[in-house]
Each structure stands twice: as C-alpha cells, then as structure tokens.
Image 1 (cartoon, rainbow, N blue to C red):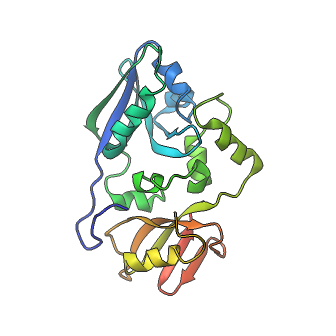
Image 2 (image 1 turned 180 degrees about the horizontal axis):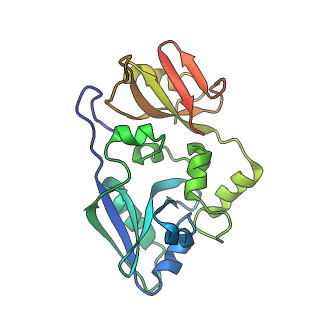
Length: 235
C-alpha cells in the first residue's frame, strides 16, 4: 500500500513516458504488450505489460510519439517496465528509453480511485487482468492480435470464463483500518486487503479505497455492507 495519510493532502500522481523508437519498434511492442497497436491510430489507448505467466506488471496509455510509440505510466514503475521490455529486445532494431515528466490520465490518487482503475499498488498483488474486472480486460487486452507475452494464460481464462480467485473492489468507510479488516475478513488473507486509498471524503465523512477480496467474499447486486463499510464490485 502507498504511504499517504488519509488526513493529509491529495496524493499527486507523477507520470513518465516509456518510449520505443526505431524500424522494429512497432513489431517489437506488438509482441510485448497486451493491446493491439493498430488501435493507437484512433487515439491513446490503454495497454498492459504482462509477465510470461500472465500477471499484470503495469498498465499505461499507449500513444504515438515522434518516430515511435510511448507508454504513459506512473513514474515509479517506468524503470521496471523498461527493464522488462529490454529482457526481450534481443536483435530488434529498437531503442527503449524513459522520458518525462508528462501529463497522465489521473491527476491524483483520488481521481484514479474514482475511475475504479488499478495502479501500481494493485498490480503489486501479482494478479492477472481478469482480477481487475471486465472493463479493465476490454480496455487493455486484445484477443485477436496474435501472440504476446503472457497471452496464453490470459486467453485461457477468457475462453473458459474462469472465476479468478481474487478480484478488485472499491470500498468506503471512515478509517483505512476498518476497510482493510473487512476486505481481509473472508478467505485467505495472503493477497486481500486495501491497496490504495484517497483523502477526499464524501458528505458523510467517508473516504474511499481500492482493495482486493477473495472470491468467497459475497455481494448482492454488486454491493456488500459490513457495519459502516460499503464494498462495491468493479465490473
């Protein structure tokens, strides 16, 4: 989890641009990213960087830059993505670099949580795309572009409509500790719990957070109420 106090100022997000330039930049990234690069011609589009076992390392906005392509990511993971891509570069005529700062899709952590969108703290839990909801999968993964790193397991989960063991939720309550206790209260506590929280409170004084729950955590019509804590499914 990040370290911002729920009683402090909003956490501003800083963004970097991981770039790929050169004659083979597009073909190289097409085999490394979960998104079909042809969608970039319609405008910036979300993509995910996956490990070979299908676990999400990071997600970012893919866009065209001069002589290549760039992925807008939270600054703290830019070097991680750069190292991951360089592992597979081999003989491709492509140069990789990190540039920035640049503007990103969310200004603050609260904006990210408002959008029900996972960030680095969520990806640290070692989960596959389907754990972050159908909208995340539809926004970041192409199943008809051909092979890419991590594709085999992700495609298998999608075809089988498999129920993943962990899923992302948004929770509201008066204290981070209360939210965390509720999310960890059902099933194994190895992965579950609060991952990110904001400082913006609603009219009732409740803050909001993203977190992970086990599949045995029960909701009714996408919601659960446990004491003062409200938990919402992320579709």
